[in-house]
Image 1: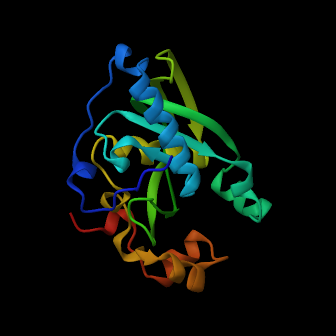
Image 2: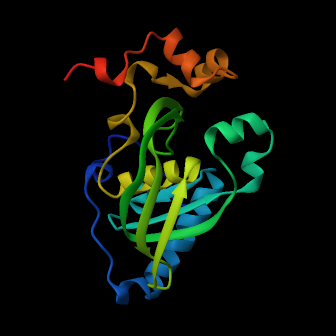
Image 3: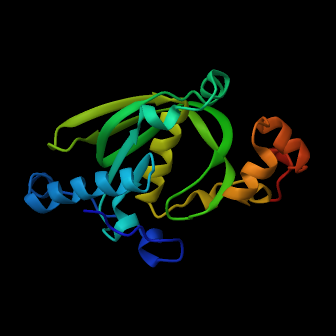
Length: 203
């Protein structure tokens, strides 16, 4: 079963989702919802999905960066992005803290902003304390692309889209990203678009 993914402009995407109790987590409806979220994410396809994106204002997200998604990417690109396969996991009531605040910028997309991309700065490494699908406490430490996915999905649970964090002058259609910037480094894109440094941005 697959749910439609809500697009930017839907009010629920801008609301802070409520936490989920242990009894709820272990209930059939939440377990079924998590299965639907996994299937919806895989069918999209995407590497993460938050419950508000399918109309449920709950602190639930699923993440998975499958090995097949990495096929066709050069070893250099994988190394630059700090990207490797990430097994499926569930985040419930997550709390994120930054372990390495070094900002890294890459083009990012969203299943709720279909067809567009933009450069988004994210922390290099994070720690996430949350509950898993069984309601057990877990700690996830991640860096590189996995850390980016976690930050993106947890933002969704607070009503934040990547649009709020992006370098607005880099905003582009996915087609134009391929047409103009495929194979270019982030530094080359920044120079070509004459993007101001973070310090030069207006207050």
